[in-house]
Figure 1 (spheres, rainbow, N blue to C red):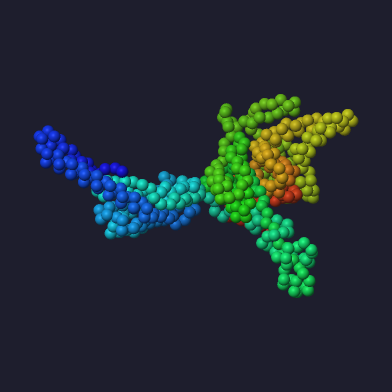
Figure 2: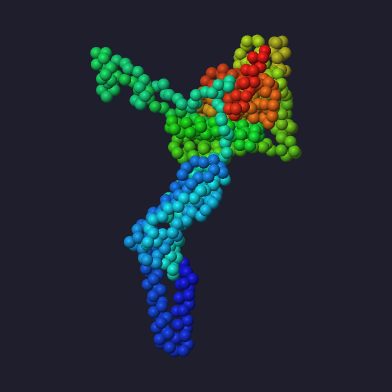
Length: 529
């Protein structure tokens, strides 16, 4: 409780009377000072009682028109309040100020004034939200005064509003340019108690009477029970790559922005189905954030908030260029400029070509060999086992192959140290049993991604890969649409290579208009030829 200026003036008058009475021995002045002091104490007691009754009867509601918006969007926010006028003195006034978050920006002040003659009021103001994140309102601030005393307290609910960064428009998720249906839904494929009907079968001793389907029993003239599909949870682990290459693209329409939109939709689907959902975020230096799969609103909000906060990282560059550790054929570890060993890069003729010391290049869709690309791939484990087998073999053929496999060892060690592969390997090593692994990445590092998917399959996971084709995001990437189409075909062959693996599905994620432009270019080129 704080005094007002009026109270200070009256208090000063009482002090003057007391001093005057003492100095001049005037009992009347002392009596006047005592009367003023007693009157102030009675007003203070009266104010405190009125403030207590007001706090009990006052209701304040802060209501944003929407709880989810984009940055820089304007949302009406309504402040409404009501109080019981019976307990208010005639000179008792209330002023109420909305508890807008610090990140909000209101054009007009959002305040109300209540009193005995106006016990209800409401006001709406337009509020802008320039900063992304989840923002919670403070409780409304109520200031009560009777002219002498002033008390401030907080009342009311604390709603929250989620502000998302400006996201991409027209998100395409598909295979070969064709949109796919909603991903993430699943069934248990197990019979038992549940909601969805599965099949009708003949009654056998031991079946519960409540499971008898009386309509089928009457129709078939024999007792039958209806099986229902039992409900099951599927552990969903989102692995999101947000390394430097994921920052390619126009502002708010980068690879990461589109993959983030797909990741948010996947997390929302898992939450809706009641599946445990977790997250592993991978930057240039390794894992940057992780949440174990869990159910419930709190777990979903943590994952969603982390996805919204992701930004493309930059590798550490102590000497002005990105560096990475390499190992030579003798196992000697050195540090040098970053080079993507074994990576594939789209070239002008539509093929993915190898750079560095990686595996041989593979042709794009135009390959006439007819062999499956997947059949020519070998995993890290396969190569290591082959080298181990040759190490103990003394025949001429083994001696001829041994140097070739020895040259592969730096590549194998390098691959195991790559952030995405290392993150998935470490995460799956902590868990028993399979999970639904959803990878969000681009096509900048095909070798690493290929081996990551292979390893996840070997650990019993079903894998969904959402890929951002570089050709759809590069500045000026569609200036030469024919070349862009060739590069898209090369990417499509890589996507199909992944999709041909058992328990793997691979889809593309990109701007709808750019995908359409590339495909139209291909169709026009086919018509001209």
